[in-house]
Image 1 (cartoon, helix red, strand yellow):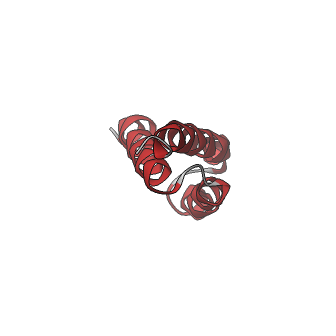
Image 2 (cartoon, rainbow, N blue to C red):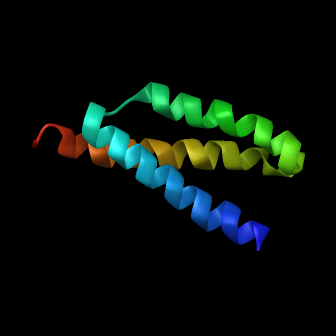
Length: 76
C-alpha cells in the first residue's frame, strides 16, 4: 500500500500542483528544484536510500507538470 501511495498518489499530487503553478506563473525551475530538495529528507526519514532515484523522478514529474501548465499560461 505504501508503494502505491508513493508511486501513484504522490506523483499525481506533484504533477497537479506543478500544473496549477505553471498555469498561474509560467514554467518555474525554482519549483522543480524545491520539489527535489523537499523530497530528499523524506527519503532518509521514511524510505531507504534506495529511494533516492525517486528524487529525480519527482523533479521530472514537476518539470513536466509545470511545462504543460506554462503552455497554458500565455493563453489566458
